[in-house]
Image 1 (cartoon, rainbow, N blue to C red):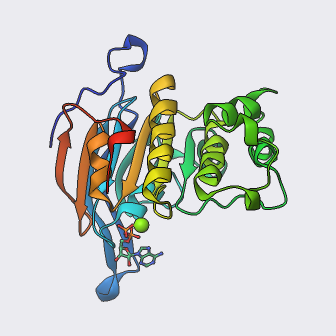
Image 2 (cartoon, rainbow, N blue to C red):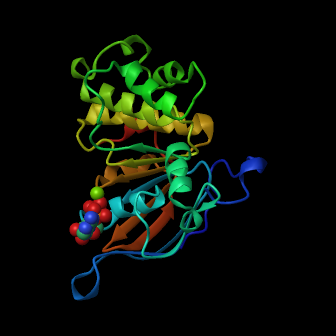
Length: 250
Ligand code: ADP
Ligand code: MG
């Protein structure tokens, strides 16, 4: 495994513990002969502020990995520490708080509420986490949608809707963003824009990003690229000079 010094490691206050640490994490679905071994002993340290792209073919365990890191599913065995918390030690209530406050999620499908405007979709989450009053508007601005804040999802492009979904994740001000195929239903230009927004908002705040994709072209903009196959890490390397998201092509 490659030992990494992430961006952000230069910030002395934040360099101490990795943002995400996995030690021999296994996840089985079902048991006995029929068990699907989705994760087969994953060990990783991800430094604070690192932009990590996770690649792998369909069924390699990418989504499962995001789900266990995000506290949405328990691992079968192994240790998971995220933002300084060992997930196995959290009771149901603490796990809910963890999901709500420490992790922002962005998925392939935007899942916006169609009867709420862009800003209202973000405000809904802002209220849930008791964010400061102007947090929703600032998040909408951060993704470049200030002018579209009062539009409904149905009147927005796919890329704009995904940017609203990113604003919704950001309004919690989470130290970690988990993005599962965030450009999976977007065309090239729109996908690049969304990648650019993710890169900018993570760099600006020293946020750690784990971005899952089956599109290997996206790897060129990452700080680090981890490849999964059949539930195992088969490659893990730093990218010496990540390219600008706008230069990614597929
Ligand atoms: P990826 O996101 O890389 O396509 P997944 O993490 O979704 O891969 O799936 C990894 C393996 O686990 C696959 O074999 C998949 O069929 C299986 N799997 C995923 N979720 C479940 C589930 N809820 N129940 C049973 N098997 C599952
Ligand atoms: Mg998946």
